[in-house]
Image 1 (cartoon, helix red, strand yellow):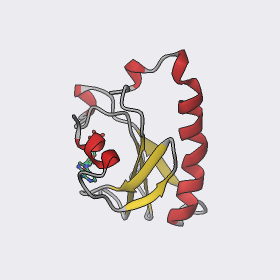
Image 2 (cartoon, protein in one colour; image 1 turned 120 degrees about the vertical axis):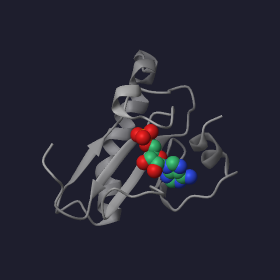
Image 3 (cartoon, protein in one colour; image 1 turned 60 degrees about the horizontal axis):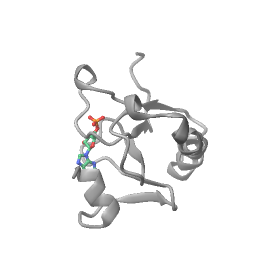
Image 4 (tube, rainbow, N blue to C red; image 1 turned 30 degrees about the horizontal axis):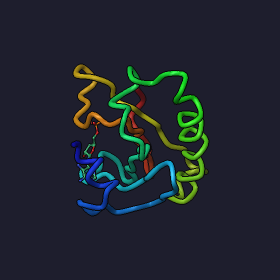
Length: 111
Ligand code: AMP
């Protein structure tokens, strides 16, 4: 079980920003920007984008549509923010549970 699964189940606490029946958003424990929040699906079958199938189209669209709402809750919607997903070893992905990083609150270095 991943650390995110434990957070979803409430076995490990998180600093929650947003939650509904499909997704959970919480502050990253080791922030890489002034605002650094993780958005994760509550479903546990997706380790990364490689696992996404047609059956996940609704969930993937739902997560994308919620990110601007979460950004507004964080107060970064007007100033802008970066959305990142690490996928696999070369990306440095640490947690094999699909998630999106929202980074902002300051000027980020250009990619
Ligand atoms: P990734 O490297 O894309 O897999 O991102 C995993 C992220 O999860 C990292 O930025 C970690 O700092 C973060 N993280 C790990 N454990 C926790 C936790 N218990 N609460 C919040 N964030 C965490």
